Length: 114
Length: 111
Image (tube, rainbow over all chains, first blue to last red; front, top):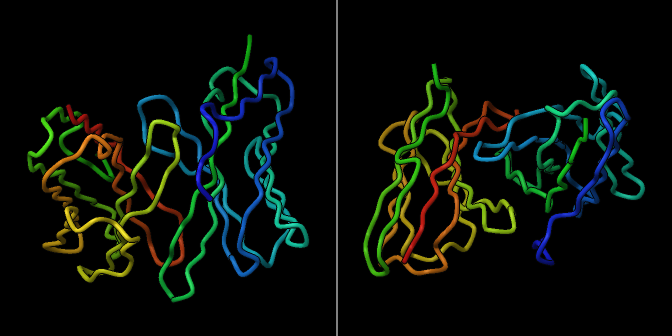
């Protein structure tokens, strides 16, 4: 959907805490989901992905949870570090054809204090 | 080596001008994209090409014309620039069914 409001939602945490960033997606038929991290002045970087036949996937310090019943995706970052400060986007593949159409959520800004 | 590279990184121009942004990927992907990121950080897909063929055109004005001379390149030409075109434009590429790899963005400012 379209972005609303003047400011991104912001999550402020202390270094060492665990962070949870949430995302509501729109299409129950979406089969592929990705979390991206965007640092200031840079392009979005892939963090972790998950397909609709799974409900959890773990990477290094990150875990993605998928709840298809309520169309909800979350990104958990363990032991958050100052270098994790960035804007985080979820994206869903909304293509009805064989080609991908990744649609991004509005983003959440993560601020990590030392 | 840069995987997805865009030029120029910054572009400042007057309303009514025509400008182009170039994109090249060396990842061997068949699919390339253009996204627009507005001042609220919202990322919106504009176009997608697969092996030089247009796949997605998200109701972008006709003033925007993508061109893919080969599957490693996807350029974006914008005619008659308007104030509302000011944004950061990101090029990306992807393998089949996989994640998108983004370039560093091209910040367009229309005065």
